[in-house]
Length: 480
Image (tube, rainbow, N blue to C red; front, top):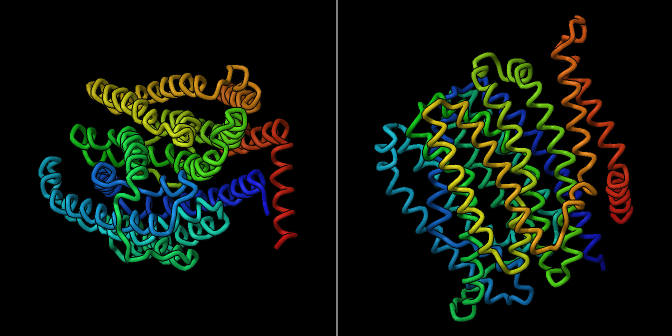
């Protein structure tokens, strides 16, 4: 039987591959849709999905965390949680559906009502598969969850592109959200054989209910922190400005969603199994941080330094107004990516409420940044948001340090290669900005050189990690 370390490493490999594939699909999808749709479309959908998510996280409890955290949970208990989840998701859907017109009136965007109502249909699909997906995660079957995510992502991207090409406009973005959830539902039910019993006894799941409630309150505030900017800015700025911001935020949030959240999926079930060994938890946490940082920081720095060339060449001139926003938010995304999965540590320790406290503070910082910055324009807002992400990283790691007993030196041990890579890229950027040689003034040449230098530095400092991943791939191939 495979030990925990082997399963975790292989899980990390599978989900990292998924991250790379999803990243490629997301890039292609964004390129196509950005050329076919308007900035206003992205802004309206961003506002709609944010509102739906806001209502959903505060009107239902997701019990997947309990399935992972409680190792001796019975089939009848899971069935009870399944039916509870079904009831709560239905309630969330009704709240969203009935309040859609009010939201449209508040933001003075008539089309927002229908967008919210149609998009909210994905809430009704979730309870039919989400607990099965969590069962797969609990059992560390990341090869299966990876397959589900990849196939669903590719198929939903194809559906969205077909919709955009056929003149669906803004509804192509809605269709992408709905089809992604639908394909995940079908594939999860195909690969997970667990089915609920017609059994319901709340007294048997009380402890799990309260654990999940604390866990979800923390996640709810995290969601609020990450998305409250849309809720506030939707009233302060036009749909076009929100569209440029959403476009830039999507680039920034990509490493968090595609990479950091992937490691959350690995860390939570893995750390829950070693929650009584703080030393092992610290090592697992820093190794995960290392893997995320060595990918995200170089990528985000390179995108920030070359955003003008990338945006114009890839997405078209109509998105050039987003460039200054992209440049700042890329750095915000890098810091957020290595802060994001701290919640997995707190949840594994049985203290998900700590995430709530931190998230409340994040929400206060985010709201303050937006309200203060809005007096001076969108660019001031994004600079203040960057400052809040850095401050959030600092505060979160002070608290983590108290729980896992790590020192400042641990950061240098695991992240020195990343730091050196960022410094080298900054020097290269400065050199190109101040050179008069024609060939070196080419933005494409600069981009290629920065990519090559980043790859070489990461390979030099993290060759053993990359070698271990390679060995894991070979071993997995030979077993299969």
